[in-house]
Structures are given as C-alpha cells and as structure tokens.
Image (cartoon, rainbow, N blue to C red):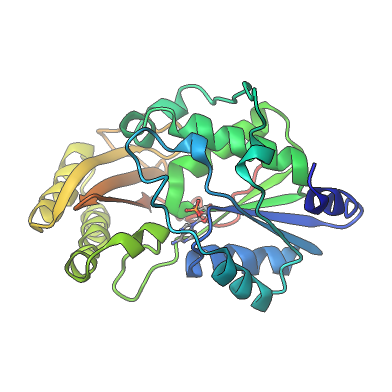
Length: 286
Ligand code: AMP
C-alpha cells in the first residue's frame, strides 16, 4: 500500500468522500469535488487512467494526462488527498481478480465497448477497498456507469453511499468531457447537436409522445443531419433495468446516446419522468 493510501487509512474516524476520476479535470469533475467538500471532512480525489476499462484500439495511450494542472486545480478546492497511484501498484504482477456486474454491463456502452464495465467495476472496487469512503461521488453524465456502480455497492455490500450528481454542460449544451479535448474546432461546433437532439425528444415526450421507437428516431434523425456526426447508438430504456422500452409510461426512462465525431466518441443522456426521481441528484444507495 502506498504512503498516501496509508495516510488516508488513518483518517477513518472522519467522514471521507471519494471522487474517482481519470484526470484531465473539468467543471463536471469539479462539481463532484465541490459536493464532496460540502458533505465530508476529508476529500480524496483519485486520478487514474485505468487501463483495464479501455479496449484494444481505444484511446488509452492518447487519453489526456496532466497531473500538474489537475493538482493545481484541486488545490483551489482544498482537496485533502490526490490519489494518483502508478499502474503497477493498482495492478501488481499476476493480478487476476476482476469484478463484474452481470447483465447491466452488457448493454449500451457495454455492447459497444466489451469489457469496459468489468474494468470500471474492478477499479472502483479496488478504490473503495483502499480509501474506504463514507460517500463516493459520480456523474449522471455516465448514467449506465452510475447504475452499475450502485448495483456493485449493493450486491457486494460495500460500506459507502453512492451520490450521483447532474451533468455539467458548456453554454452550448455540450456535456463536459475530457474527450472534448480531442475535437477539432469544427467538430466542437457540431457536437452540441447531441444535447439539442435529446432536448427535442424530451420536448416531444412532454407533448405526449410515448413511443420509444419514435423518440429514438427523433434523436437519431437530428444527429444524423449533422454531417460530422456518426451515431453509434440511440436507446430508450427503463432507467433502472436498462431494458429497451417501446411504450413509455410514468416510470423513469433514460435516453442514452453515443456519437462519433471523427475518431472521438462522445456519450450523453437525458432522463424522462425524472420529477419522481429527481434527475441525477440525491439518489444515493447504501
Ligand atoms: P472520468 O474522469 O471521465 O472517468 O469521470 C470521472 C467522474 O466524473 C465520473 O463519475 C463521471 O460521470 C463524472 N463526470 C464526467 N463528466 C461529467 C459532467 N459533464 N458532469 C458531471 N459529472 C461528470
């Protein structure tokens, strides 16, 4: 165990908040840090580009890394510990234990990125065991990940409460993401179409549209009208089971999308019927 991990262990009589990240921090990450600071005595931000959640041919090698800049940002937020372990410490030689949430991990992002969530749930399990946080903070931007982590924590009885916070967007509506750094100026101009398409579907839902198929088409058609965009998937599903929904009722429903701009793959989502279960906020589980 590293000296940072050992120091964190000595904090166990205080309320600890953990914000897991892969770095290249932006306002989305910082919104989680701010909430952790508000709720907890000790704030730990992990910065680790986790190799096991990237598939072959994905962007692991090129993923933006700037620990100096991240550290400077986090200092402004009075973060107590930045946990940025070397990969050999997290995955020692002979590492062979993985954690999988079955079912939920195979759909949507899991179907497009096989093995991705196995990497996510494995690293999150390791971080929870090392840091032992009272509260752990994630973004609704990665809606499926949030759902899977909540299931992981419940099923394996991790003693932490998962807090999900709303997606932070640029003024254009584009969801903040470290991968936005890859976009060319033209692609960046085009990318807010994702949010506009989701907003249009949400509007249609408010106006009474209850067909999952037609809502999917609204989103797909609007995104496909943007020549720089290539849709990977658009899906309308039950917000708890992720099962595809065609006839919407008053249950919370999630529209999720993944779209390529050149080689850059962006994801976003919106929740319908979120009044009952306020979008992204406070739906902690323990
Ligand atoms: P990442 O560094 O991309 O692994 O993200 C770390 C955490 O920040 C995850 O819980 C993400 O869901 C969350 N996050 C990323 N982008 C945003 C955003 N735009 N708004 C809110 N949370 C975000």
